[in-house]
Length: 329
Image 1 (cartoon, rainbow, N blue to C red):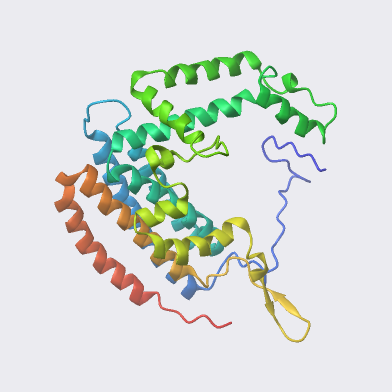
Image 2 (cartoon, one colour):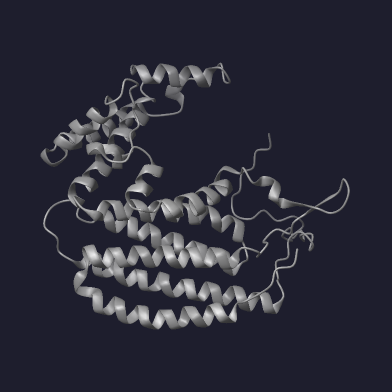
């Protein structure tokens, strides 16, 4: 195992190391025509991201009575950040890594849509209660007196026989965190939700200690069912499943292509082949979320959103026209 401690930048002979990549494998400077295409795609995604910040700003400024009214805002913010990250990757032609973020973006927007569809307070509190319970279970692993800790430590000791739990954590501080979260769950607005959480855990013969927040109150049991409920089955089957291969690395062999009998070549890193598909998906996913967010949370902003959409449609059509290319394998 190589251990590296980086404090600032260590110089070798007063010069920073600058290893050049193999150009055929990793081109840091794509040709001008490709750069123009990628820049146009990225600029158009940026416009959606930028307008999303307007929606987020409008949303957090609305004075809504009660606690935890801005939980949906967190999902919107995360979606905007993911869109911004995808834009950066498109501009640099890092298309395959952007597919991982597309999948996360799909999950995030579908969670947001389910939360604001109806019973928003109940669903927002379900999210917070599930998160608190999962945190408590996680932190209890570091308290030796807890039953869950024994299993946790035994698994580590199989690889590290000299492992001592208290050398790696502060039990006093962890107990304080656990107690704070337990007290939170006793608050009146969370008490009934917490009862429902434990009912959901014990609903089936095989106890589920990790139910999804959207499964409470007899909601969808898994993400596939959630997509079916929101009428996103086509997106789930044809897009989400496809992008899941990038997350789970099940399509790792796509980095090689046949080059004759018993031969293979490595595809260039930063391959731009699917840049338009990623572009279309991020545009559609964010627009769909924005539309629902405006309808459910900011109906007074419908005119501003409609006016922006008219102009964006023109930008999108122009970008689509100007970024046509033919990929030759």
